[in-house]
Amino acid sequence: MYLPRHFQEQERPALYDLIRANPLGLLVAQVEGSLEAFDIPFELCLDPDGGTTLRAHIARANPLCRNLRPEQEVLVMFRGAQGYISPGWYPGKQEHHKEVPTWNYQVVQARGRITVRDEADFVLQQITSLTRQQEAQMEIPWHISDAPPEFIEAMVKAVVGLEIAVSELTGKTKLGQNKKLADQAGAAQGLMAKGELAIGEAMLASIAKRRSE
Image 1 (cartoon, rainbow, N blue to C red):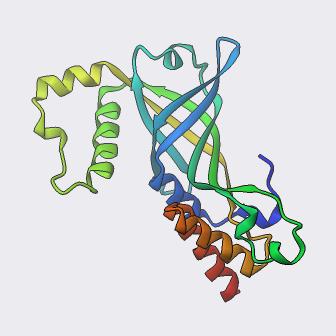
Image 2 (cartoon, rainbow, N blue to C red; image 1 turned 90 degrees about the vertical axis):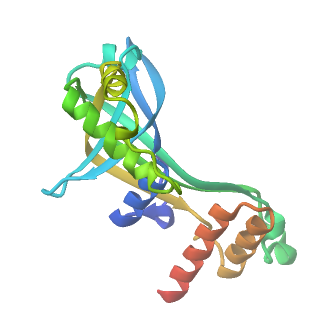
């Protein structure tokens, strides 16, 4: 990842928050000699010893689980808010016109070694935990126990678990921190006016942080 100093995100809580808010990760791995990418929802687990683990489940028929080597290294990318930035949003552009378009975004990359977990208890626990996390946002949360036990048992047999011991976590928040505060604020306002609230709000939070430092 190209990571200029002013875009580095080194605060672990911020990286964890982005993953939890955007759990659909893009897993990249070597499969039968070529690079393949798989969209998979992950659960972030913080280990008691300070380590970080990503857990997920995939269909047993997925070629990923059949072709992974033991302890193979993989890369998982999680994308947060993003949006196009028009030069016209910068007040400074009206003074010198030395601006060009760009794209602001938030991303976390996790590297680690992956293990296929085929134990029914692990798979059921992972499905239950990930479901509970996502259903917490619902007015009437769905629970595993809402479905017939024999149906859940059949579903569990149809999938396998994945576990990634994260060895490296890298974050990048490109939110205009390299611009003057007025220009960063102008871009945030432009995004908000377009209805791109997530990236606009992220930029406003960045501005507030810069002003407090």
